[in-house]
Structures are given as structure tokens and as C-alpha cells.
Length: 456
Image (cartoon, rainbow, N blue to C red; front, side, top):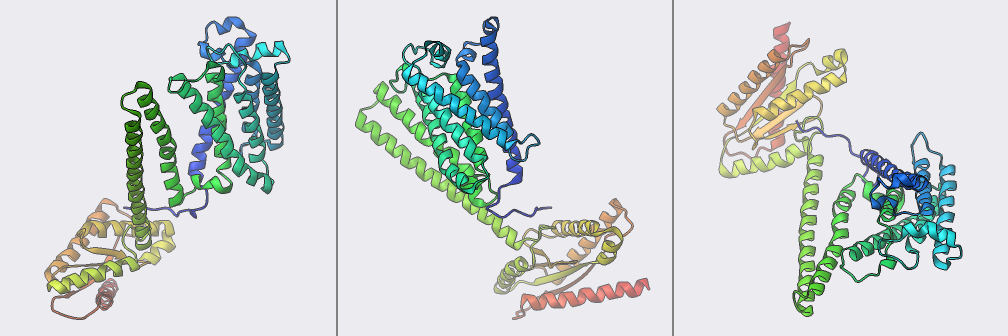
């Protein structure tokens, strides 16, 4: 049976998705905290550093403290957490911002040699020149964003809508710059590269801040439950990766001189156009698929998965016209679940819903896929299709046999009982589907009254 749950308004964040993102955020903060604590441990106990991979020592103590303060601030300002202390979180974020600004100033002007020695670990391998200034500047910007994201002030949150993308862009630039330089895709001096460990921490913290901001403001579309949100989540990673893949391909072709420069540009432009068309096709396919889901939601009964009254008449009228055009017999069978009110009163509405769902399953399994099967609300079901008089009689008998078998398998205080009535149109007629349903309904009520008389 096709069961559906009530959906949220499209613009509202999806609670299930937010819960998953919260777990991922906590995992990222945990990893960042472990990295910074490990750096502190290696600094305090040099003998421990001998057992650690070299990359675990490539972060300075001031920047490790900045990273730890950022992680602690985000942990304390997490919405809905039992440890949520937003004021303390803002204070710690401010301390991280001040520390990163001081590191940035020292990296620029180098006034204190002792501090320079502490900052040496922030250099990437091979960097024997100046201290990197990109990372402390990025952390200073990140700290400001953290304060605004956790603020309850509407104006600051709106500013955060623009600041968080800037932080993400900064992190993306630093990540791509260092990756391209590390793999030799661009000619980049080691003096301009930063510690890989520090870069990992920056990326993780930036991602956490971005996820926090998506719960409010214009970026909430990425965590919504609507079609637009699902499309945004599906295609954002693709759109993010494609430009980098094209740039990697371009630099590989240019550096290796595989083809003349003009041909390389033409090939990459053509590939970009082809990828754009492919992405458009996938996007259209996805939209059509979701449109089909919406179509089903408007025409289907939520409890049973059968068509609702609107869906039944919409498709049933088409089936009737096809039968009339081909001069084929057409039948309508009306079904009523007996004693539903008594079941609801004695056993509760949840058990009544179970009886209705089981009836829907019986109807679904008893009739052909080409037959139009619907629930009219309450305890009434209806089936329409190209049946002869003999065919609809056999189908009604088959439904009763399946009901008896179901009751034998599931003995209960109130066995599942159905009353049926059917009519067949086996000659040219202008009779409408609604008229056929009305006549089948009358026959069903005659059978129901006969049952009551027999029990009396």
C-alpha cells in the first residue's frame, strides 16, 4: 500500500534533514576540537610529536587556539542544544576574532620574533619566507560571521545572509588555491600556501557556520521540504564542481601541451556547453518526476493509495469514453465497508483506518491495473473498467473470496465485511459515469439492506 505522510509547507525547513545536519555539524566540531587539542599536546610534550604524522604538527599554537575557540563557540551557540549558551558563544567567538586579527597583524609586520617562532608551523612545507596572512584573515572573517549568525537581532541576521557566502567564498578560494598549487596545476610559490591541517579546520568550521545560517534567511531554501529545495540540494554540488573540473582540464591540457591552445579552448568550451545541456536535461527530468508526484498527491487518497473522487472521475470518464468509442462493455462496481461506525466506536479510529487500508489493499489486488479504482471518502469504494456482465460478476465474487480468506488469516472481533453493487453498460448509451455510479450505489444498498434483514 502506498502510504503518505502530511508534508510541510515548501518554505519550511525539513526537521528530519535538520536533525541529520546537526549530527554532521557535531561531528565536524568534534574533529576540529580533536585536531587542535592534538596540536597542543604535541607542543606541550615534544616526545608525543615523534609518534604523530608530520601533518599533525603543521599548525601553530595561536591558530590552534583560534580553531579551538571557534569550535567551542559554535558548540555553545547551537540552536536547541541542552548546552546552548549563546551569550558565552558570542564572547568566545569575539576572542577568536581578536586573536586571529593579532596573528594577522604579526604575520604582516613581524614585530615580535618570539611570536613568529610560534607561527612557523602555519607555513606549508617548503615555505621559508613570510608568514601566511590568508588564514588569520579568513578566521577573523569567520568569527564575525559566527557572532552574526547566532544573533537574535533581525538586522544582524540579514547582514549574515551576505556575510556567510563571503566566508564560504573565501574558504573555497583558499582551498582551491592550495589544492591547485599542491598538484602543480598552477605555478604557486610555497610562501603563499598555508598548512593543510589549518585548511581542513577552516573548511569544516565554515561549513558548520553555513549550515547554521541555512536555518534562517534566504539560504533556508537548501534545507526546505519543497520541490525547489530538493532541486537546489541535488544540483548545488554539481554546479559547484563543474567549474573546477573544467579548470583542471584546462590547466592539464595547457601544461602538457596536448593540443594547440586554440583547440584546447574550443574543446573545453564545447564540453562546458555539453555539460550544461546534460544538466538541463537532468533538471527537466527531475522536475517532471516531481510534477508526477504532485499529480498523484492531488488525485490519490492518502490512506489507501487509491484514486480519490476527483481522480476517479477524471480517469474513469476517459476509460468510459474509450469503451464507448470501441463499443465495449463497461461496468461500475460500488463497495461499502460494513460496520465502520461500530468499529470506530468500539475499537477506535486508528483501527477503523486499518480496516479501510485493508479494504484498499483488497481492491488494489483484486482488480486489474487498467481498471480505475477509487475511494470516495468514508467507507465507500468504487471500481470502473471494461467488464462484461459476466466479468464484473466474477470480479465481485473474487473480491468476496479474497475478503473471506483475509478474515480467516486475521480473526478479529469484527470480521471485514463488504457490500457490493454493480451495473454494466453493454449497449450504446449516453449515460454518464456519475449516473452509472449512482445506479451501482443503489444496488449496493439493496444488498446491505438484505444483509440486515437476514441477520434480524
